[in-house]
Image (cartoon, rainbow, N blue to C red):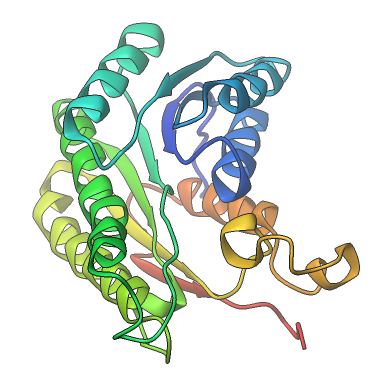
Length: 240
C-alpha cells in the first residue's frame, strides 16, 4: 500500500530549471515543503513563488554545490527556514562532451567537482538529519551514461559512473537507518543541459520531459517504506 508523503520536507539541488524545477513543483503539488538550491537567486525565487502558490512552504538558498562551505551554509539556511529534511534530490549537474584529448583538464576537473563532489557535499550535509530521524529518501540523478560509456562522453560518463558507485555503496551503508538511496538513470531529456537551443518545440516533445521524471520520483517516494527501487533507467519511447 502506498504511503502518504504530504507534509514532508524535500531539499532539491539544481532547482532553478529543468528536472530540478519540475521536481520541486511536482513535490509541492503533493503537499511537500521544498528547499531549493541553485546558483541563480532570481530564478530560484520564481520557482519558490510558484511552489508557495500550491500551498506549501518554500525556501531558497544560493550555492555552488562544488564548494563545501557554500553547501553547508545553504543546508543550514533551509533547515532554519523549513526544518530538517525527509527527502534529498541531488539533481544539480553539468555536461561536458568532446573527445578524450580535446576536453581541457580544467573542464574535466570541473565536471567531477560538480557532479561527484557536489553530490557528496550535499549528501554529507543532509544525511545526519535523516539518520537522526531513522528514515528518509535520497534520490541521485545519474544518467544512462553512468551505466554505459559512449563516444565523446569520457568526462561526463566518468563522473556519472562515480555517482552510481557512491550511491550503491551508501545505499548499503544506511539501510539500517531505514534510509532509501536511489538513482535515476535517464537517457536524453529535453532540457537546456542536454540540448541548449538546438531543438524546436516539436522535436522537444519527442524526448522525455523533466515533468516525466518528476512524476516518476513521486511514484517512487510513495512506495511503502519496506521497498524501494535502487536504480531505474528511463528512455523515451521513440524520439527519432
